Length: 176
Image (cartoon, rainbow, N blue to C red):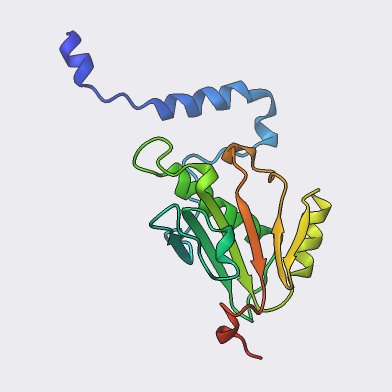
C-alpha cells in the first residue's frame, strides 16, 4: 500500500485553492479568485539579453560600465509610450530571468541589470517614479539611473536600471 501512495502524484494546488476560498468565505462577494492566472497571451520575451562572458572585462561603451554579467535591455520605439508599468514590466523580466535559472542562484541578483532605451525623455515615468519615492540621478547627459531599492522587494536585489534616450547606441533607431 505504501508503494502505491508513493507512486501517486498528489495534486496539491486544487486543495490549496479550496482552502484559500474557505479562508476568505466571509468576504467571498468582495473577492475574485482566478486559479492559475495567465500573465500573458503570448510568450513573455525581453527585447535583448546581453551576457558578459568574462567578469574582469570592462565594457568600453559609455553605458557598458554599469553592466554586470546579465543585462536585460528593453527598447521603446519612437511611437511607443514609456510608463511606470513598462518600468515594472522590465523589472519583472529581470526577476523572472533570475528566478528561472536551472539551479538556485545561478543568476545572482547582484550580477543583474536592466536598461531601458527610448528616444524622448520619459517625463511621466520619471514623475511616477519620484512619486513612489524612487531616486533618479543623471549619470551623464541624458542617461539616468535609479539608485534606491525598488518596490518589488521579492527580487531581493539592488538591480541597477538606466533609461537612456537618443544615445549613440540607439540613435540609429531615431526619427531625428
